[in-house]
Length: 109
Image (cartoon, rainbow, N blue to C red):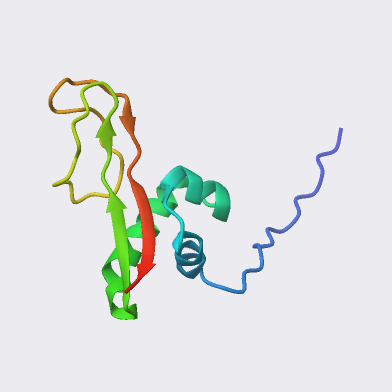
């Protein structure tokens, strides 16, 4: 049995950069990284990486990057002081691992 010859990888043609696409999706919407991932067609891990850069540069564009912090589903603890954008692994109060994802939005000033 002969193996099929491999086809060369052809990247998806994009007119805008990934970060501009993420900003466009977040303008007027409040979404989690999973929802952004599904909308853009990018892995959730990559979305978090892009969100870090967007957070650093968005203020220069007269817009605000808004983060609704993650929250424990069991005890209601809100991760307000957390600097990382990723969802935490467990709650520091009750040690529960069921945590709501942080939500992200971009608003015009």
